[in-house]
Length: 364
Image 1 (tube, one colour):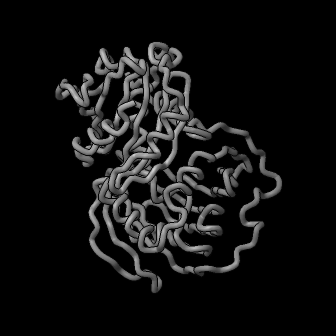
Image 2: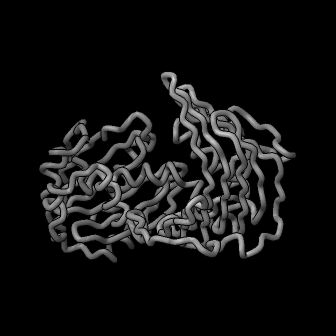
Image 3: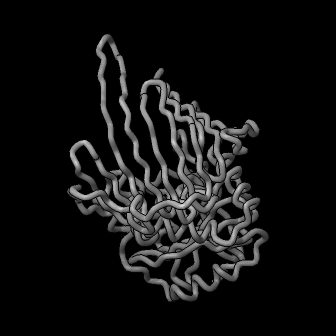
């Protein structure tokens, strides 16, 4: 069972997996890129973007052919995806139907991570994101005169320019799909009409479970596991005498080298905060006091040791990660005076000593 405890920890992974793709999606102001598609899928892809990718339209027209056990299937696609501020439309132009959702959470978190960053800082974020995901950076090559970072993630290879790949080779189960940019007008003027839904399309309103705030993301993460019937235990109202404002102010006041606050959220049974320590993602959360005594019960975590830290009971635990997930760990601190359990959660690359220092400074 993945309760909100584990979901809070997994947010750190979500941030590390999407950091370079949110907010400033592309680290250049505007442009128009044309792609050639080859391999099992042939066709074209056209991309228009403005406001660093906050506005983006992607038109894909393709035919995919897959042969399996002597049976060949062919699929024709004509799709338009439009992102305009906090709204996202996905449209099937073959039947003129589509969906509309909001992406407030992505925009807010991305701006917090990328705003006011220099080109060099943004590039270092790109590199670190690849490393955090277990990828390998192979060097740099020019595509259409643009210096691209070449890297691999599993069986996929990318040539990425300022946050957006100009070339990719994706191999999966013997099927290979290639995208190669054949023209790129950088910093060009893009008509506002490119980011508007075409007339005649029937749109269905959707709801993004990750939208709006951290509690929405928590619900989305636990919903993916399909287990909600046992969540009530961790959704009882928070009993702490520590206010949310006191908690957030304390987190924002952390004196840790490389600390950069990202965001926080208050829900029924918890306070959640997220931040960076250098290139690593971490967070601090507050749950009810009784969580400490059964932190590992029903959770895919292994308690490595139980000890005393800052005069309080503490547990240090590893989380079980999936095949492609970033390894995470957590530190639980029992605080009877404040009627709370403090949880420090982070990528496992962040040393336990740093997590203990965070706990020392958050010794409410």
